[in-house]
Amino acid sequence: MDETRVVTFARVADFGLDVRVHCLEVVDGLEQGRTIIIKENGATLGRSPPADIVLSDSEVSRSHCRFTIVDGILRMADLNSTNGTFLDGIRVSGEVPVPVGAILRMGRQTLKHEHRTEKEILQRDEFDREIKKANAYVQALLPQPLAEGPIEAEWVFQPCSKLGGDAFGYGPLNENEFLVYMIDVCGHGAGAAMHSVAIMNLLRKRALPGTNMAEPTEVLAAFNAMFPMDDHAGMYFTMWYGVYNLTTREMRFATAGHHPAFLVGTGQEPVPLRTRGGLIGADPGTVYRAAAVTVPPGASFYLFSDGVFEIVTKDGVEWGLNDFLRLLPAAPIEGQNESTGIFGQVRGLARAGELDDDFSLLILRFH
Amino acid sequence: MEMQHSDVGEVRKVTLKGRLDTAGVDMIETRFGAAIAAAGKNTVVDISEVTFLASMGIRMLIATTRSLSRKGGKLALYNATPAVREVIETVALTDIIPLAGSESEAVSIVTGQA
Image (tube, rainbow over all chains, first blue to last red; front, side, top):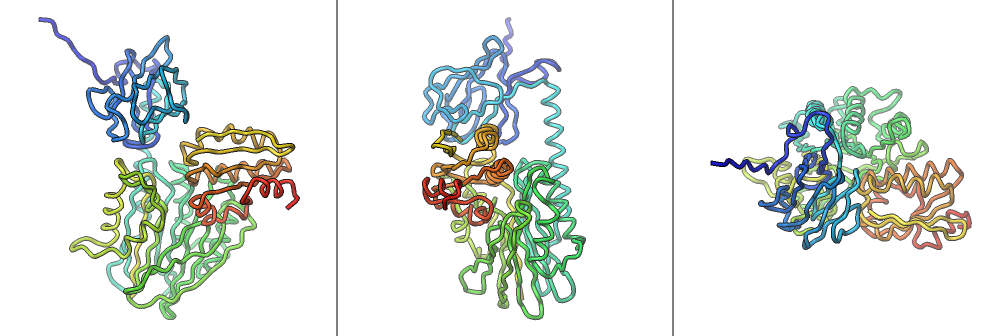
């Protein structure tokens, strides 16, 4: 009896170490970072089997497009998909060649065409494992939740797959003052994470030279002087920095390019806490401004990164800060702390696939 | 992300369309730099059709503005949508790059007539 072996997925091992294969790297969408290899006799792409490449996005048609390899060149044909196939932003009609490096989009999935050897693909997988380790290092530097005392603290930190540049911290500066901060380094990847770790370590060790850490404008100015963009691979970062005085109940704060934190008194509307100041590292002449607020007993303080509200919902609606604010304060759920509850809500509302950016949410409760 | 450019007299006009996020910036960053910093002309950038501005987009704008300024050229953005204007305001980008309400206002700013 004849035996037919149907190969539906190409594996790197099918090709050999130094042979270049055409692959699609998921740049944005579900399974970000996944490498899809296109075998020599081509592949169809759709949202469900029998498509060879399955992208479970409702905006991808069941039979969306087809890839073929002709004379070593990758070609693509749109199969009359509902929402179209886009190559470098232009809707594809008919059958076209796909240049190496081209950005393809079907529905909400963005793929990049790469032409790589097995060795390169394996190195990429190794790199992804390293990213996970870098992630674990950042996590280890985050402070412990505070379950009791004059200030309680809880948080959720969920980095996106590419490892963003979010970091935050809080803790006593001295017996009377308590500091809290959040930073967001622009971009993703190991570079942004390394940058955020360097910044966090300076703050953790209270190691800013000649700087009064109780004065937010001095802290931001010190960072701005120490981290000019041009000396740090073009990276800038945003920061929210505040110092709470336990005696006067005053929170003094300053922000650099960061959206506001919010203070919610019992039964009150959220009050935004932000001052106008430029990104750290962008311009050495930037002037930072401080403001202060008195924290009423029982108030909650919310400090979060933009990954928390820059989501696209299942209905395709792009959220903004004001949409997120409607979730605060979150109604208490038995056995679950507030930050975890909010994270679950946002994740539930967001479209399929993981959240696009680091999710950092810190909640302080002042007695 | 799409990009077009043309010249209006001595001023270069660049139009951006789409999302200025990591993928969008990846697609046009080289061309953007070439059309602006390499060309060295005073430049106005129409962002009326930029639907989303994220950190890599901000980085690209700042880096290009600074490269252009080293050649003595100025850059101004104009016609931001309310959502994009909010992002620009949050990061106080206008301290580094002016934002105008119209093309003619942007041209006046970069040619020094404002």
